[in-house]
Image (cartoon, rainbow, N blue to C red; front, side, top):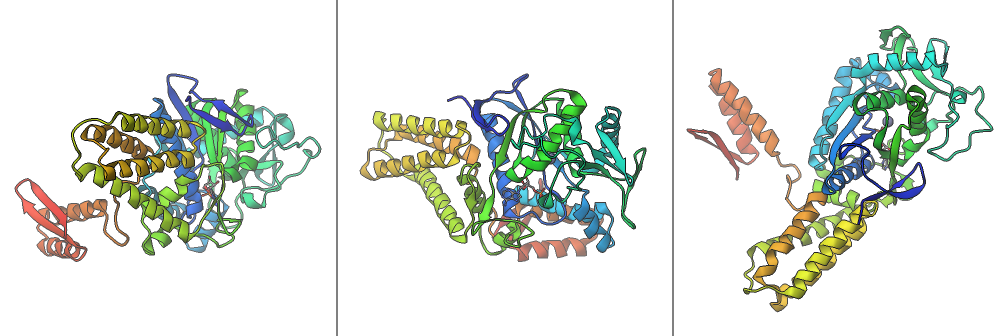
Length: 466
Ligand code: AMP
Ligand code: ZN
């Protein structure tokens, strides 16, 4: 089945292929690095990861840009309160985000771009919008005048025709949004850090960063723009207004939005306090793979109710698949080839791919896998599974794992990761080189306490877990 997605813009399921060179130009809205991301945020980022993998499985190349919002009201408020520079404050949460992405096995986009590295581009875009009469200034801030963009509302399918005039609301804190006109550039309040620019001192509003960075790296029309469902309005609607006012071209062909991760009927969110971070859950002994599996298992357009029981079931599901893989690799099978089973394997693999291509129906894709595993296990029990069936079964499992990526066991909760071991070894090597043997011994001891044994060989240091 050809790949197809539900497009928020057209409200239809449409066949998808990129407009040019077999390369998908995709922009997804990234994290605001003012705190640790919660697993609600990671539901959306896991959806993006599955999307990337499915696009590649269809033979497309990717050029994917994701922003990191490293300046906004909350960041400034918190950094000022903690007497930190914006850079120092956001570095903590940006690094934490990247670490969490690593644990959840989320691929890095081709380009991960911080807003603060693009202030000049944003200022220039705001000036161009001004030259086109799309803006007005007030108290040192610059606002986008929605009444100059007749298509406003086409993504969220809101009808704004009755109430466009005049209102001016600051919508950076978008949950409070009563959005019509919105800030492109914000004058600093007393004591706030600011960029000195031709627009005056200040900082960009949230929406402009995405338009500017998307167009800069991917061109005037994207193939896909994606994010969480709460971004449809006003964020993405505002991105369209800015971008299309700048270029006169459609901003994105496809718009994909993930539904929320819920807790007891409410959106998981910082403000409601009903959230878990990845760290919370890993600290309680849940494996990141189980969290990944749970977040990916419900199709992205359905809301997902988070429970710890759901997480336990996810861990059990992964265990079943790992056991099947082990059995496949280690059991001895009678020679020959069971044609019927071969057909069953091919059909399951086909159903798996078709389900994913059908707007990423992960639940159906998983059902195809589990029904197959059940049948294959009983064929193994009865001796009908033959040596000649192993390769296709393994290939199917490989296909499954190229998308879901949960079969390889990860780091145990509380266990030091391979990357951390390597970096401590590198530090120890540097200490030895500097003839600081006391420090080198101390690092060896530290690693030993974490269960890591070092072996100095001619070709360098080898290590293993106890
Ligand atoms: P933020 O860091 O607040 O800008 O959010 C990052 C991403 O997480 C955005 O795409 C949001 O739409 C998404 N998001 C926030 N809360 C949830 C939730 N409970 N479920 C799914 N996605 C969410
Ligand atoms: Zn955005």
